[in-house]
Amino acid sequence: QEAFCRVLSIQSHVVRGYVGNKSATFPLQVLGFEVDSINSVQFSNHTGYPHWKGQVLTAEELNVLYEGIKLNNVNQYDYILTGYSRDTSFLETVVDIIKELKKANPSLVYVCDPVMGDHGAMYVPENLLPVYKNKVVPLADILTPNQFEAELLTGRKISTERNVMDLLHKMGPEKVVLTSTDLPSKQGDQFLVAFGSQNIRKPDGTSISQKICLDIPKVDAVFVGTGDLFAAMLLAWTHHHPKDLKIACEKTASVMHHVIMRTITYANEVAGPGNKPSPAQLELRMVQSKADIENPAIIIEATVLQTSSDQKQ
Image (cartoon, rainbow, N blue to C red; front, side, top):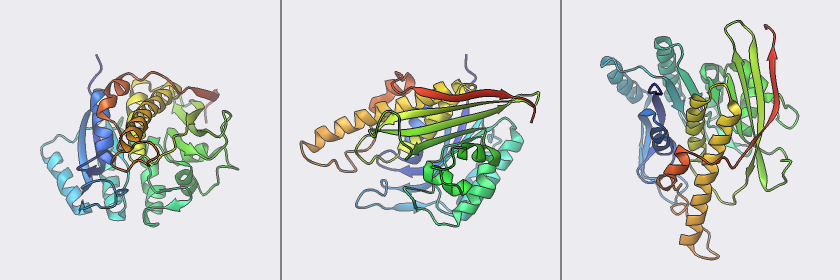
């Protein structure tokens, strides 16, 4: 019987659709996790629609919510999950909370998606970068940047630096997954490449390291909330396979692929032939994918680049 696990997820909330906590909570619950969610924003829908309305949680309000949890002595967590944040004081408050929860439970695992930008452009204020670099990433156990975010954090371009993951490990996290890169796939240009790396320190001081790569079929549409789903599923599958990043990544990527294929098929049907689906039609088909989330058929396989046990550091 699995001991039950409690996750604190600090992410955005939308009334309609699937991003942030809406993208992470249901899949985690389906896989047996208790999810406590703090909504960093409450919007009507994601910002890819023509219109959106809503409220943003301040650092003070975040503190008040956490205080309430603490006063009732229910601030015990096995996992923390964070994603998009666009305010430095909010992010610094998150850092304080993580530090306190890690003190209370030294084996707590912090899964961090350092959401800062994509395709060479930042879509959060630039003053978030030093906070991520100096305060957030050193606390993270599992880090899921895309290529651009990994380059921002390390100051290195990935085309030249295949060891960007080692540089990220040095900053703190024992598992790093580059969720997407522009590096060429061996399977051709219909695929994008993701990389994973894990350094596990054993009690005797030696460490085991495993590096993998995944070729993921490209889908020609813009989906929102997929990164949030990826980080949540990686949390779940690394929990079930703590020593085997390969199978954890295969299950995570396969869940993603099932959800995305179901979504694009539906969106194209509803939009009709020759029409481009709208953001509303492209909302992830999350509930409809429940069976795939619980037990994903492995349709994306990872290649092991290296596995090594090295001597004491």
